[in-house]
Length: 89
Image (cartoon, rainbow, N blue to C red; front, side):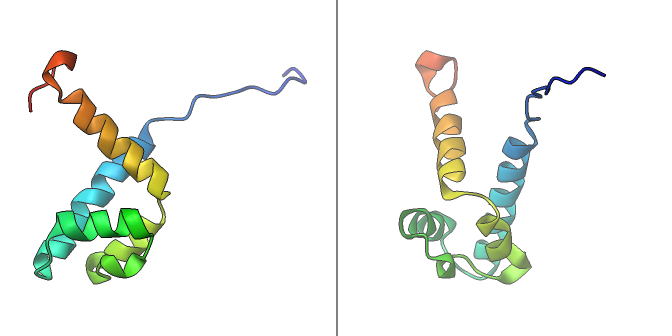
């Protein structure tokens, strides 16, 4: 083993975790009768976790992810669906 520090690329578990979290949050919000789009946008814009229900531990789950990371993943997903990028809206 050399005395040099090695850099490792992070595994894309973050993207999977974000997708799973959003799926659970949407399900929890729907089960409680809320509109997931309105509630998640409210949370992302304001940072107020009370927009997200505590049902299914959705609030705890979403707070473990930085809001900027959530936004980046959502916009990245949307952009990948644009026809000029080979996607389909």
